[in-house]
Every structure is written in C-alpha cells, then in structure tokens.
Image 1 (cartoon, one colour):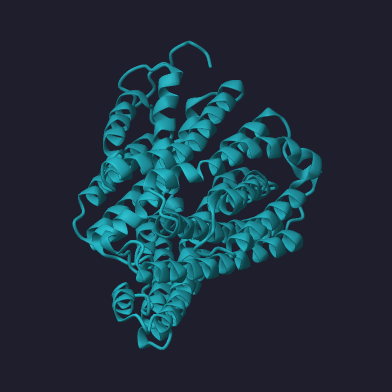
Image 2 (cartoon, helix red, strand yellow):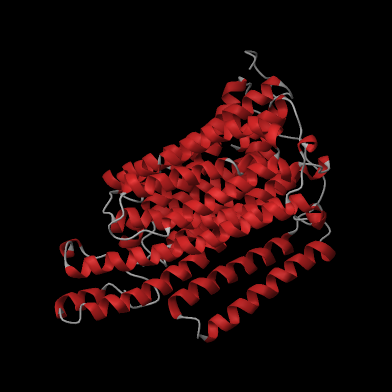
Length: 529
C-alpha cells in the first residue's frame, strides 16, 4: 500500500494512513471470526454451569447463527442505504453489548439473549466490513493487498479463537470467551468514528416483512427439531411446529417473489442452475460441518477427558490446512474448473464424517480423530473458493454482492438447521443406548442410580457427571452412551455430504472459460479462503 495518508472524506474526523483503516476493518472481521471458534470450545463448561444437556446447548450456537444468517442480507442492505460507516459502528456496538450481556448471564435465557444480540451485530458489521475495504482502497494492487490482509486475519482468527477459547476457559472462566470481545469492540468503535469515512448512500427500501417471516420460519424449524429431541416425536407441539415452519418458509418465498418491493433475496438469483447448486451445497456443507465441530468438542472433553485448552489445540490442524489448501485451490481452479474441485471436496467431507461415525469410548486422537480432521479440512479447502466463484459467475454487477452474501447466509442457516437435526439424532440414539447401558447395570444398584441421575434415558441427552464420580461404572456407561450418540450424529452428517456430492454432479456446470481471470479474481479467492 502507498505510504500517503488518505484525505479525510465526509464523515471521517481525522486523516488516517491506509494501514490504520485496514487495521480497523480487519479487526472487526477478526472479532466476528473469533467468536465462531472461541465459544465452541467453551460449550461443555457453559452447559455444566447452567446444568444443561448437550442437546440444550445447541441453542448457544443456534441463537447466534439464526440471528446472524437470518439478518445478514438485511444488514448489508442497511449499510448500503444508511451508510456503511454508520452501520459498521452500530454493528460493532451491538456485538460488543451482546458479548457483555452473555458474559454476565446468570440464567440460560439471558445467555441466549446475548447471543442473539451478538448475531444481530455480526449481521450488520460483517457485510459492511468487506464493503468498506472496497470503498476505502482504490481498485488494483492496493485493494488486492487489502483483501489479502483481510483473508489472512480471517484465517488467523479461526486458529486464534481455538487457542484463546481453550486458555480462557481453562485458566479463567467460560465468561471470558465473551468478555474478550468487549474491549476490542470499544476500540474498534472509537477508531471507526474517528478514522473511517462514510460511503455514498444508495436509495431504496428494506424488506422487513421478508426478514421477519424468514427468521420466524427458521426459528420454528430449529425449535421443532430440538423439541422433538427433548420430548419425542409423538407430541402435539411437534405436530404443530413443523407445519408452522413450513408455512412461514413458503410464505417467505412468496413474499420475495411477488410482494416485496425491495426483496432481500430476489428470486432471479436462483435462475442460474450452477449458482443454485452452489447455494444448496453450501447449505448442506454448513449443516455437516457445524454438527461435526459441535459433537467433536463434547467428545473431546466429556469422553476423552481433554481439557478446554487441549481441545483447542487438537483443532488447530483444521484452520491451517484450510488456509494453505485454499491458496492451492485458487491456483488450480482456472486449470481444472470448479466442478472437479467441488465434487472432490464433497467426497472428502463425506469420507471424513463416515470415518468419525466409527468412534467409541476407546477412540484415540492421533490415529483416528486427527486423520479425519485433516481429510475434512482438505475437503473444505476445495469447496469455499470454487463455490464463491460459481456463485458470482455470470451474475449482473448489481447482484454480485447479494450473490456472494447468500453463500454466507446458506452456511449459517444450514449450520443452524443441520445442528438441530443432528442433535435430534444424537438425543434419540443416546436415549436408546442409555436404556441398554441401564439394563447392563441392573446388578449394580448404585451405578444404575448414578446413571439414571445423568439423564441418559431421557431424550434431552446425558448430563455431565460430578467430578467425584470419575472412573465409576456409571461414568464408563455414560461414555459409551455419548460415543454412540456422537457416532450416529456423524453418520447423519455424512448424509448431508452425500447430498452435496449429488448437487455437485448434477448442478455445477460452470466451465473453465466462464471463470474470471487475473489478479482481482485471485484476491477475491484469497479473501474467501
């Protein structure tokens, strides 16, 4: 980047070096990316504090992803119309406040409330951050370098979140995985106020009705699955929730197609077969990947006995393999085309999940879990860049932003819905395995009583045992229950991988000659990676 200072355009209080502007924007992205991994490591500790089962704790993830994914397009639209700098500051402030609220939570609903506010803030800040890179740096080498830094920060944030989440949970408390966002957010808000300039505002309106109906439909669907996991399928509420979710989601499509004057998801985006296929693949990839990380975190800590810090370190190969693999894929893409890479990535994802479906209480890390993690990372690295390129291929300039943003929406929404589906599989399988283990302990009344106190025969899923019970017969039985439920969850996640393979083979028809070429395309690919 040039060493000259930017003049202070409208809205900026002070002139700023380009590096400072990029530091502020990349810092916001770091905070959002950090949250995706840092909270995951702390989930078992959160569940123990609030006395919630593994199934209940899916809401700590879903509360964030539903708000983030469901309102992401509306957040990007708000930046275009109300000003990107202004909404960037609003998003950062909301994210910081939500983090503080969640960290202070002494009840589970208050924690979920904080996570929803975090998701809302992320939905506003994240799309405006990438837009601010575009408007703050001139097209060419400076913008490409900015994208490269932005990409590096995104990758480093995932790895840093794993380590920081483990350290804070292990040596402080789970609350600090949320508190850590607050000082970062305050500094970024102040920096944005003084040094970022305001973008040109576009004219238009908001699709509030579409946003409300879509989020309502997704919440109803996720709640339906979690309700079925806890209370069974033969329940009046279950029968009502699924049709309600279906009606709301169908209504959302109709609103976007025929009612909304400014639809946040225009139906013309899906007219291209390959683009629609990219969205389907990202949806099911998110479903499988979110579930894998969720189950594996609990397996690390509650079956294998890993500490929070050791769990974070155990995940570290994943972001590093993706970071290096995505750069290689960006170079291979013009030579082999997206279909080969997307299909291969989907196959690797499915293979890794089937590999994980073999877990049992004796499963080890180095010989069994680590190889699956590396294979999954290789698969993901073959998916993210090609899917983004396919999503923006042959799209009108006016729709390029929403075409790429829908991939992020699909990943978040797919992750939330997929996690609820897999949690239902886990809870049902754990309940059945719990009955079997209880029968095996019939001759040991004390162990049987302890096992029943751990909730293994209930659809909500098992609870963590007290420390005093370690190495007891009940705990060994509990580990068998959790391992069986996790294995069935991984097997169900592999079904999402099979769907991704089918969609790649049938729908992805973008040729090598259709791909953009040159340095700008490489920079975009790097930012996605």
